[in-house]
Length: 282
View 1 (spheres, rainbow, N blue to C red):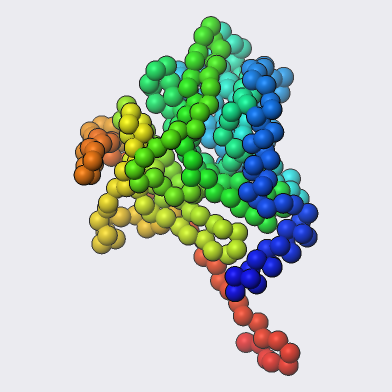
View 2 (cartoon, rainbow, N blue to C red; view 1 turned 180 degrees about the vertical axis):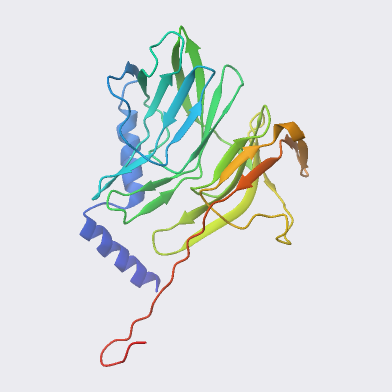
């Protein structure tokens, strides 16, 4: 079966005229490294896209990162970072493109959270890369940090990939991530698709202590009463007014704000076996 799957995948790639998805991602990383760092004002807003993240870096600055666009034939996945000033020194609606040689690889359906630490820190986790033909998918399990620096109404900053310890979430997209305290981030749910009709939806929960860069897997009630079923594309919101609760393991204690969750979806794949030769259908 494994040989048959590999043969079928090779044929799909040959028909699509594209390399293996991991090679596509690596080629993009190499291209980005050759790019100079620059911050340039844009005459037009960013290109149309879906599944990007759009967050507030501070009281006056909104940030757009990543996303994808399908033109009816091929998919383009972005790792551009744009900011737009809501008020202050820059004109309202003036977009700035922040190009960096070190930047997260292109992705969509990822998540970002901004913590008000050290002038502002934006954390990005997970997401997916879809090959141009949509024949292949690659899910990320990496964590990136953008350190924000705002001076004279303009945003500057640098990206770095964060090395963590502990029980980290597996690669996924369609998950949700929320700040749950001054130095705490929570990740829940999402899905993983290997591109060969094997899709896994998740309802696991993880807490990140950004001070220690430690992930903790949160054990929840397995009865199904207090555990949301697996899902993707849902809404999540922190309940700051309720107050924080502690999550304790053998090595660390993390205090996090409770979260409310609503909606989402799960897709199921139905395989229909068809008879061949002179056999009758049914």
